[in-house]
Length: 342
Image 1 (tube, rainbow, N blue to C red):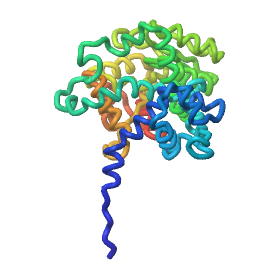
Image 2: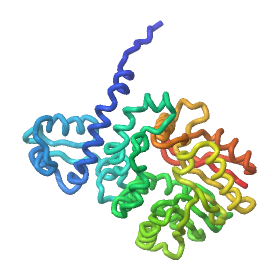
Image 3: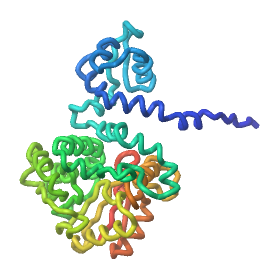
Image 4: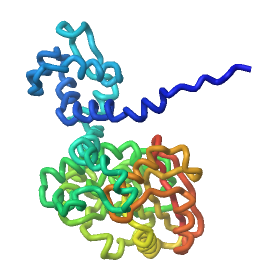
């Protein structure tokens, strides 16, 4: 019988994982991949373009090669660097599929806050700007239209694969209207409208978001198919629709607020209507979707009471409200849609 060889490699890889993470976050934040989309660049050119000192330059760039984010021809001073296929597609700020917005926020905000995870676990309190009396991130964001527009675009790019998958997988044949609660840039409603010609959609979110969402919808030529409606879903009733959706909204709230939002969705739906929540749904055994679990810890750091949840959790809450059946639809990797029928 062969004795299993146990090594500490996984422990060290995860324990020191912040090395690789920070290298990628810094590269995104300094727009390295956006610069390299247009042409190959030498190390010296990158140094000049990004305002680097030069010490550690090739260690930094070649680590990105070793991690698979960059390609390289030549070595050190003779090297020319270019993007790998995935970085070229998803980390160029000028492409619609850009997912770096979350990474930028991770570098500029979340990275430091996660250093206080231990305190958050001990106290149960947020570890973000609220900890030191600073202005909440989203409040500050809503007061800066340029930053808000960039943020919504970045978040939309990160979620686009999920929205596209949902718009194509979900059976809309028995429905004619949809309202996306907390619709941000209008991207979920847009995908549903583009892929289901009979659907009329509403994207519902706060007033500062309305001009940006309206511009997005007009640019996509969907002004007759998607209505941008302003309101505060925490204080107002939801617009009536056959399908009510929420993308990365429900996890932000504590249990009682979650149930209150579910009740609003129930009240806004007709008999047979569908309530759909798109999130990093934790697997019922709580041991496979590591990203969903880590996202829940991020919500601990960011909110007073929020948390991610499993399909079983969702099933219990919605049936308590009056929904009669639930199902799960896998979308992309760690993200699923949980669906409740009234």
